[in-house]
Length: 205
Image 1: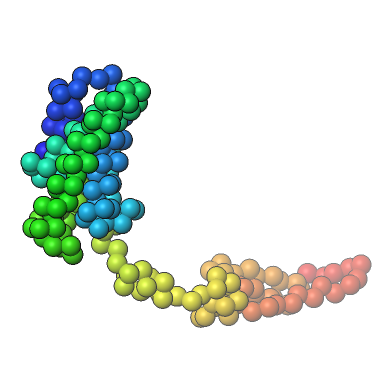
Image 2: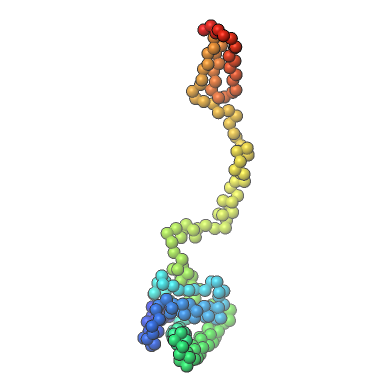
């Protein structure tokens, strides 16, 4: 099987062009998508794609000798973009013939419902290579069962009134003592206290 780098190099060798790798990767993605949706039976949203950050040693899906279809398709797109309609028609004819040849080989070898040998593994490997970050292993370990368990941990509304086991009193470790005449009142927050100061112009202490 050809790699991404080998395909790009082969395209430039056979048909020198002014298009950068970004444009050619876009056309390669179109080709891969056609192969995956029309032949491999893969949903459009699950197709393998490539970008500027893709590893150039990534193996393309179609095996040799059928992998020449990638070259034909991208060259056809180069011709189309350059308004070379005659060359475009010739390149597309070569591409369609190669695609048809691969499709027939696939059906003969695997049957309509079978997958291309190694294709599922290759698709998974390509997808994993494109989706990588520091905590990927942690995120991959999050299962439906775990999220359901987390969701069921508590039904608490978040309101103080709905808390259970609330303290009946908030006792202060340092009590306040008030002395008025012969009366002494100590307040530490554990219970309400009332201090009465008698009216009068003279108070004896």
